[in-house]
Image 1 (cartoon, rainbow, N blue to C red):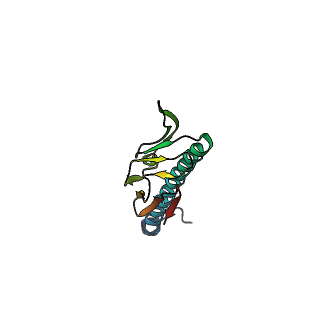
Image 2: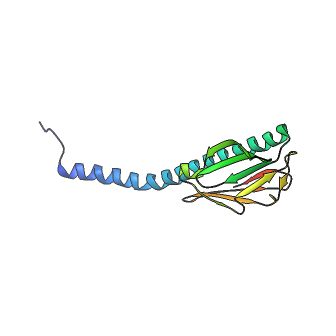
Image 3: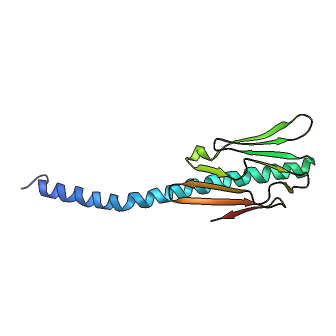
Length: 142
């Protein structure tokens, strides 16, 4: 009666597992990059819409400050009042580029000098792009 495995059987199994892993790891990496970029994009869009809604409801100009490590929104007046702070996309390992680091919104939600502001979020092979309009809209490009 035979017990155990031969060296040839063990090496064969390890080689097969290695081949399967070699095929699965790049796909998992692309999937993880896409998921992190998508999540960072959703968080940035939610932040933008919360700040825009606050500008409309309060009837006050709002300043949005975008950075890789933080997102900040402040009511503008004689003294600025920061009312919304969120962690930036770097929390998910996503790189961040913006054509304007500061956007202002009028009390009616329109952008003040925000037309065609482009925000790019990237990680690995995944990339998302957001563009603002002068009307205060935010468009997502995939």
